[in-house]
Image 1 (cartoon, helix red, strand yellow):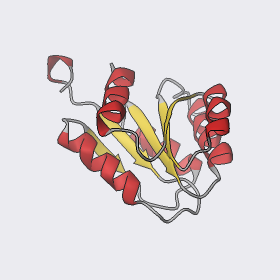
Image 2 (spheres, helix red, strand yellow):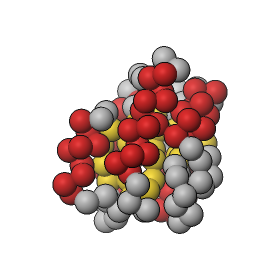
Image 3 (spheres, one colour):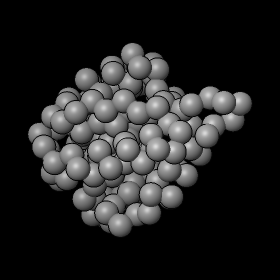
Length: 133
């Protein structure tokens, strides 16, 4: 758990039209089981909806999931929406089916880490914890 008893709050979001959320739910469950509070926005949310929900829920980090191939557009749009609302201090992590060549592009747009299928839960949890601290 977090330092001094603080439970970190994470928002898990599915931007765009992607309706496959099994992976996002697995990550949410693993985070919850490891002492995080998790807010799941559900599927088919706009980047603006995700950013506003993150601000309203006072989260420490955001995890985005995309399996549709629209990550290069949607993930940066979430970050832009956070900036628009003066919340660019909330770190964003991405996951899903992300080609390796897209990872540096996403990081250049401000995504702090990108995970593909097969990444260990320990690595994902450790990364969230590190970004929250």
